Image 1: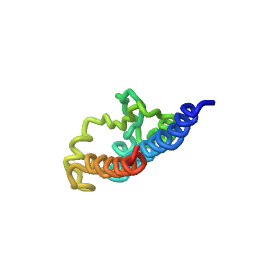
Image 2: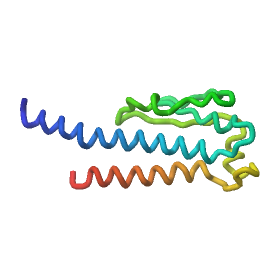
Image 3: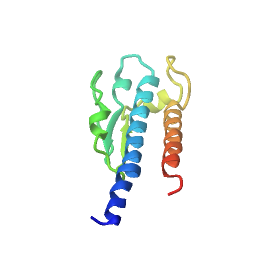
Image 4: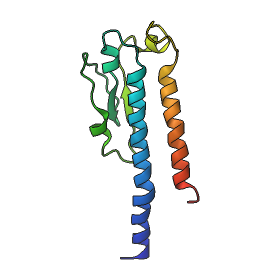
Length: 130
């Protein structure tokens, strides 16, 4: 083994590994926030936050048909894109404050911004000085 090989393995384990874990946790937290912030009448909108990797889902599911995010993002790579889609025709109206259960507009954007800002801070801390 060479010094270069050892350094590459250490970099993969310490930096890339940490970044992947932070990205997975961020996606999980965004998904959780979206579900928790979705106004609930029948539960259909709440059930339709559908995670995927590299290709956004274009389908919808019935009440209680939510796909768990953890197994989908378990092996996400550093070059992968995580999507959390909601394809119901009225999700944008809900996000605009249309529902009496949640009249706060732009809660989708708020969930993404809050968690993305945290992710960026953690990644900056991990990679500081590299």
